[in-house]
Length: 210
Ligand SMILES: C[S@@+](CC[C@H](N)C(=O)[O-])C[C@H]1O[C@@H](n2cnc3c(N)ncnc32)[C@H](O)[C@@H]1O
Image (cartoon, rainbow, N blue to C red; front, side, top):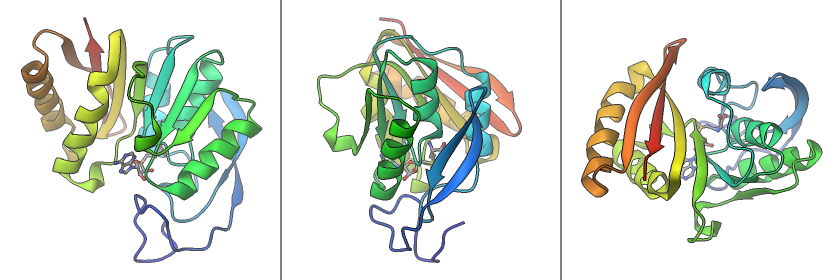
């Protein structure tokens, strides 16, 4: 819940009090204590969609650059760091408070190679072996499409993305759109699929074949 009516979780600098609190959660089979705060997405627990992604996605690559688009306080990016301690983890968000929390949470969990940064701060030459995301559907279709087309083409050949989307928020039309758009942009390079369905969410997969 937002502490102020006017704050959205994708506000760059939320105006609500930056009062942090500790949260005990399970991430990829480990009980950990993290910090959260109001003014960010789902600060009181691991979101259901996020939990679906963390349970259903296959083990990420052990090394390389792994990206979480829209990291919030970090449940996905931290999980990538716990599962692949030798990888470089990129947690991008537009919410500065969320980014600060993700960085501090990574430090507390001993995840050293962790970059909690805005999209603009990710060096342009970096490509990603894996992308995991609970994307910000509520920014609107156009902004969401723009966001996905900014990052998905940056998968390395052989790399895969997993996106969790609520069924009643357009997961199936998003899957169709991704198939068409990626094929139009780079014919034959990507395969879009449905990796799983649970608790009202689809886990979409995007594999870069070449
Ligand atoms: C559905 S939330 C998921 C947060 C977190 N990954 C989780 O699972 O709890 C989506 C996140 O995307 C962020 N976001 C919104 N627009 C963005 C953009 N253009 N680039 C990166 N992140 C964005 C929001 O601030 C929010 O933290």
